[in-house]
Image (spheres, rainbow over the protein chains, first blue to last red):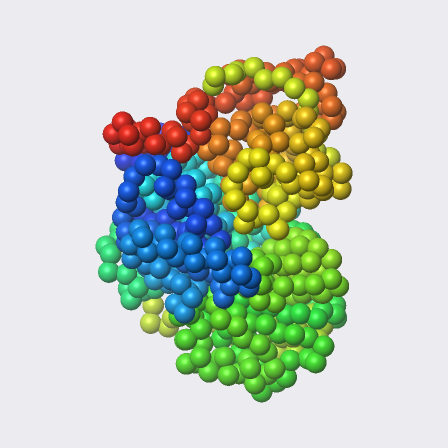
Length: 435
Length: 180
């Protein structure tokens, strides 16, 4: 019998089996269930239909305000009020409401609600982010979330695993986002990754800090994958040390595990990369599109709104002024990130440079509020999706790139290559020095 | 499944159909309700469907799609309830986006994988779909195709009337632990 990959090991343990194989349908134990404002009320309504009075564990159902805070309309404000009643009624222990909010996936990982070797689900597609700490993170609909809230289980089809082995040294100004977009272009949405697990391995991953790992796993859903995962290591242990007191034990894939496909990428050959409007896989090296005008710059989201991202942004904006033809909007991924960025002086730097900063939320990435795009807008975004209408108007264009490219381009007023900046302004994306 | 042979008229998607187009953004926060969601289902897919009740008025019973049907990374269940509310009995496509594949199973709407069926079907053709064997017959053109049969777990959920009643029954019977 062939060995198992990391994700297969997790699914075997969670379904109390010795072995699982791709294609198998099974029920697995769920560590945490996340549901956020957008679908929170619907999830509790589906839960009510199951006929159990209490959630399976009040400390393992995590409720977060992110898509609709602060509420943009009376309709949403009312919906959130109705949801808050349900959250309180079920005595949910971890409720990250406005004031303590953040984008759900950031909140889940940074507060230790996701543990290596376990499965956590959420009612938002970017739950794949949880793979950064060696967990299986999976997006589900409200029915699945409601079932898991009731019985602590969810059904899954065991995915085939595709390995991306990343080697080489990270060049200055190349971020995890650039690798994600590079892989997007490499696979050309050809269907080879649909329903698969993407496992990132290799020395360039070992040398990547948790922020970058979260970006990589986050965007695996945009590649069409079921989940993305990085095996836990010393970086993971260091990250979790201050965030959870729960015990966890790492699982590792077998050396003779069967991969569905294997690819190798030398990260030293990658340039800062952008996705052109409308299609995620329509990528270009930033120098190939340099000079392209745009009028809105957006930095934030569950993909690139972390402290490390804001550190690079501040380093680029320090002492400079955002171009007069560009509106720069920065939205930290969580209140914790926001406070850390305030204390580090990044927020002051951004505001001094003529950038706007808003309270943590999904903001314009969800197309609902806080900087939505209108007709004729050309947005350069550090977010994750660029299809027509994603950020508001279908008559707006969305370019995607790393936060470094967005920040430098915001100064220039046209898409620009941050490699023009002095190397001294670059901040290495590796793990903290003590790890 | 209570009904293993389905018959009816097919609508064939011209290209890639995204969840965003099946249910437009303005309806994402509406109530999950088959009749309500069916009113504007497919409104973003083609201009002819962008009117109240437009898609449902055609009386289609099957959707024949291409690659990554209902993709784009949205988990909203309105996509499935809207399609079902419009009278669709099964969706047959080259491949499906996983979020909506899950939702379809949870609501008991068969999502059937069959490569290149679009080459053999045109909008308005009468199809016969055998859920237990995966056989698909085009009654209008006399062609046949073989799809993957629907797994028994999927049929059990569909027979129960969807995932919520399926689990409610397990909870009531005290048999949750048998789910593994």
